[in-house]
Image (cartoon, rainbow, N blue to C red; front, side, top):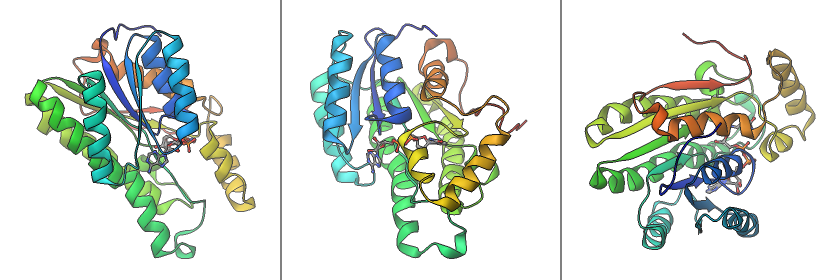
Length: 255
Ligand SMILES: NC(=O)c1ccc[n+]([C@@H]2O[C@H](COP(=O)([O-])OP(=O)(O)OC[C@H]3O[C@@H](n4cnc5c(N)ncnc54)[C@H](O)[C@@H]3O)[C@@H](O)[C@H]2O)c1
């Protein structure tokens, strides 16, 4: 897919690997300069080099999305370097493992909520403030089909992803007056380091393999999600806001 993002600046959270990396590269191939947010310094720097080879600017903004102050500083440094943020992709996400709710504990919930929900609140609050001053912006939230239909063994993660869907719709309503569009992409299962980690334990492997069998078009690749995000980042989607797109290989069908 080819669109024109020349002179746009995009911030991608959790960009160093997996889906975030594919999104950052897709945006850069199509002309955007990239703010690479992640916790992993060396993988972020490797991506920075790859983007610079495409003759795009890339700024590494190491910060934990769950830490408001750290993200505030990262956004401030990144905008000082690259001038602005036109596109925000809230991609950073995490789950500890696949386990029935009654076998999970309070401290695990805190971390899942901090990254998957508070992280999205933090980044959107800071970046949408900047976008509202410029009266322009596109926000793309990476949720999950788990947030649309629930997912066995991922109760708290699914709850956070459902919240991200509702936030997408609410922010679309609130931010439209500032010419900011907000949309959401829901992957099914995608071949990334996160999925590999969740499959390491026997129980997780069993559950995920059953879900994979339900995906009519098979396991997703990070690039499949990047194409959907690219569409929402582009001018071609200018008449679309507050929408939820499952890029999940036919795992679910929601009307
Ligand atoms: N892989 C899948 O099957 C799948 C399915 C549905 C939804 N998703 C969602 O897609 C997104 C990307 O998932 P992925 O599979 O590429 O994951 P991944 O673990 O492979 O990559 C996530 C990246 O985010 C970074 N990250 C994690 N916590 C962070 C934090 N607190 N602050 C900043 N960066 C942080 C990691 O360092 C890593 O580089 C997540 O939101 C995930 O929930 C993934």
